[in-house]
Amino acid sequence: MDENEAGRRKEDHIDIVLSGGRVASRADAGFDRLRLLHNALPELDLADVCLETRLLGRTLRAPLLISAMTGGPKRAEAINAHLAEAAQALGIGLAVGSQRIAIETAASAGLGAALRRRAPDILLLGNLGAAQLLDGKGVERARRAVEMIGADALVIHLNPLQEAIQEGGDRNWRGVLKEIEALARALAVPLVAKEVGFGLSGAAAAQLVAAGVAVIDVAGAGGTNWALVEGARGTGRTRAIAAAFAGWGIPTADAIRDVRAACPDVPLIASGGVRDGVDAAKALHLGADLVGQAAGTLDAAVTSTEAVVEHFSVLEAQLRIACFATGAADLAALRRVPVQAG
Image (cartoon, rainbow, N blue to C red; front, side):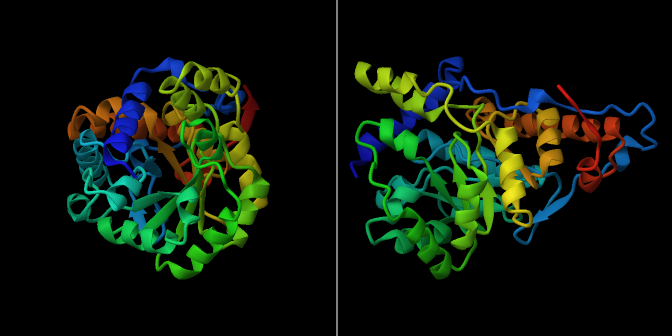
């Protein structure tokens, strides 16, 4: 891999996502179709609402995950530090961006042992692309990804549409499921499988679970569209191809329902188009165990640790009030709240 080219691509990704609407999915995440029934007599003290949960052996003070954002550029070192420090302060989880560049070049981008030292107590997830498992070095890379940050689990991100549109992307996906199965057997920590914003179907999730994946992140449509991101940094021809996929994917709310029905006992992360704590409450009601947010956090992430803490503190307060206003004392009760069509 050419380090400079890889770094430029990641820098472009950050700038393009920060630019806003031009790479937002035209698909609706689906949360507006669901209304949690308001309870005017909650019989609760807001301070007593419990948002605590556990996943992969870690306790989280709220069911929130800072989702994967960045991988390789120098700017990512500060971003990753801000995110780790904020996650530690808030007691929530963090999934780092792709570690491919950090593994294959000297550009660690803050994805080293210092990251775990900044956040010793959090649920910390490493990250590699599924296409990087196909050259015979996947297990070696995966072990390195886990070791370099002291990860509790490793996310394998599935991004075939992004790779198909990306100039020079990985287009041969034959054998990916077989390699995931081999990695699940070989790796000492659990695997998390996630899409990057086009959603996982129940059928695909069931295949992944049968292959040994321990956690599913549906990463549905409704947030950043990575086909449009690659189109924005490509040629006119690439932009024209990408434009057809502006509304592509499985809406996040639909993906949660479908995957939960297909995999009733598997821990489930919901990400993709989560705007606020009310969307988070709806995702949890539908069956998610954690709710992730990425692009909505990026502006705070490039600013400071304090900005990230404030951002997620607001989201947590919104989630807590949504529970209170439906009469749900905890996350189990939130799943039983009556709903209305939006």
